[in-house]
Structures are given as structure tokens and as C-alpha cells.
Image (cartoon, rainbow over all chains, first blue to last red; front, side, top):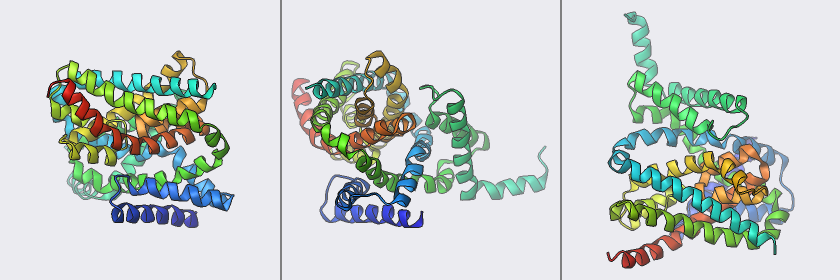
Length: 111
Length: 245
């Protein structure tokens, strides 16, 4: 597990460095993930320890968003000003966009 | 009346990161148990339940956000390594991913554009001011990218942060009933849609439902981060012209 953590943190660190040096608008961890995909594809196999550690983290991914979700209460005031219009917009836009993306995916896979 | 030793013990504990780290993980464990007991019903979202428990605890104990975050930051920090870990399911499902290159690209462009245009359009129709519309536009992508876009274009970064989290929660709760109503059974399509539109919180939901859906959600989230950063400025310029601004 320790080795897997070293791998994950190193790729994140590498991604952060690349994002800074190249002034990319993409977050470091996303670049790190892309680099790890490339390395694993070249390697041909996924180390079992990395597979199990990634599995543990990703099945509990919801936990990691809890602090940010709690943080929403800090911004009650901004929501209060336009509350109803914002909630309605978010609901409609999110549902319509998900439906559009999924229907497009299905239509394009049938070719 | 609370006895004095208990009070001073609480004063000590309330300031420790350990207390709030423990509360965060315990609240999540409880929320996850509730979600499991309800067969992962969409409305029983563990992020929402855990946040509600913690918000109530902070309110009852009168704990300010910075003190809470001293402890919670250790959990929050793991979002970085977790994002890197998305590489693993992507590589595991590489054959399916490669075969789906065309639907991935098509759904990415459509989902990304519809998410931005529908938000600006509906928000404009409901009379939201321009700076709020700008803050709303990048709501479907992960917080650091969304805030970056909002700041660049004259939005309100803190409002964007709230809208991003809310969008993630709405997407995570709505995806299962919506996809069932549309009769979309392909886990790749379902996962990809929620990843594109509802970023990490949607992706977290996808991983709890199905590993293939999770892998595709991760791809959708990562790709849309880049696409949204590119299209939001162009869409806002076009929208400003249309709205006569």
C-alpha cells in the first residue's frame, strides 16, 4: 500500500509541477492521472498493490467530497440572494445535460 | 449544567484536528450505512447525509468553519491522489474505452455545450445578473477548474464553488432515475454522462453503482475539465451578443 501511495503522490506532484511550469489550465492531478494511464499502458500490467489501493480510494470517493459539501454552508448568503432561480437553473441544466450526453453516447455507439 | 471538567475537556477537544477528522469519517461511515440499508437509493446520497450530520454538529457546538477544516483537510487533501487513482480503472477498461472513442467524443461535446448553454439560457430567462451567469457557466467541472474559469471571466469564485458542489449533488442523486426513465442501460453511457455533467461527486456515485460506470465517469470528468475551459469564454461572448450586453 505504501508503494502505491508513493506512486499516486509522485504522479500528482509531477502533474502539479508540469501544470505550473507550462501554465496549463488543467489541474495537476488530472495531468498526473493522464501520465499514469500512459505509463500503465506501456507497462502492460497494473501492479496488484496499486490496483487494490486505487480500488479502496475510489469506492470511498464520496467521503472525500464531504468537507467541500460541508463548506457550502459558509456561502449561504450568496445562495440566499438568488436562491430559487439558481436552484431551478441547476436542476434543469443538470438533468438536460445528462440526458443529452447519455442519449448522444447511445446514438453514437449504435453506428 | 455541564460540570466544569467536562467543559474544559470539550474546549480542548473542539480545537483539535483529531476531533473533526473523526467526526467527518464517522459521519460518512454512518451515512454510508444508511445508504447501504436503503439499497443505495438515489436520494440517500452519502455525501448529502454526511454533510447534513456534520453541519448540524457544527451548528450545535458553535464550531466555526476554519476550526472544522483544520481536521477535515486531511480527507479533502486525498482528492488529489484519488484523481490520479482514476487512471487504474481507465487502464483496466482500456479495450472498452478505445472501442468507445467515437461515442465518448460525441457525448463529451454535446454534454459539455448543453451544460453551459442551458445554464446560461435558463439563468438569463429567470433574470439572473451577468456576474451570476458567468459564475454559473462552468458549474459542471471540478472546483479548481471552475473557479479558475469564473475568476478569469469576471464571475464570483465563491459562488461558483457552491454551484459546482450543488451540481455534483443534483447529478449524483438524479442520474439513476433519469437514466432509467430514458431506458439507457449501458453503464458506459450512464457513467460518462454523470462524469461530464456532475464531475467528481457524480463520479463517486458511479463507482458505488458499477465499476465500468465509474471508469467512464472518471474519463468524462477529466475530459470535460479541459473542454469547458475552452468553450465557456466563446459561449459567453456569443451569449453577450445575443442578449445585447
